[in-house]
Image 1 (cartoon, rainbow, N blue to C red):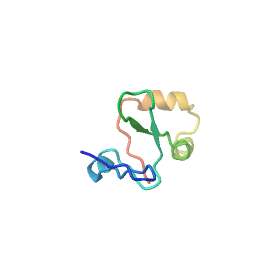
Image 2 (image 1 turned 90 degrees about the vertical axis):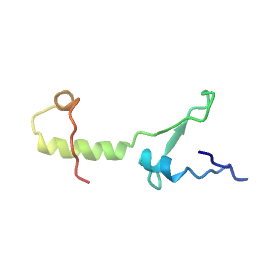
Image 3 (image 1 turned 30 degrees about the vertical axis):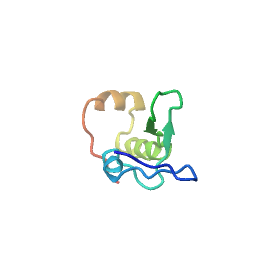
Length: 81
């Protein structure tokens, strides 16, 4: 797959890659300028993480984040949107 850089330095990420990486409008990517190729990754979304932890706090009273994470690590957990 290819993408062309515009005069403004912008590219369009091919739809197949956007779907695979679940990129939505407004997604923030981080680029590794030391890599020998263009490498981008999602930036951790702190707002979503806080929302998930907030739900867990009310659903699992009395548990710490550490105990909850160790109990769920390795399991698939379906979260509501």
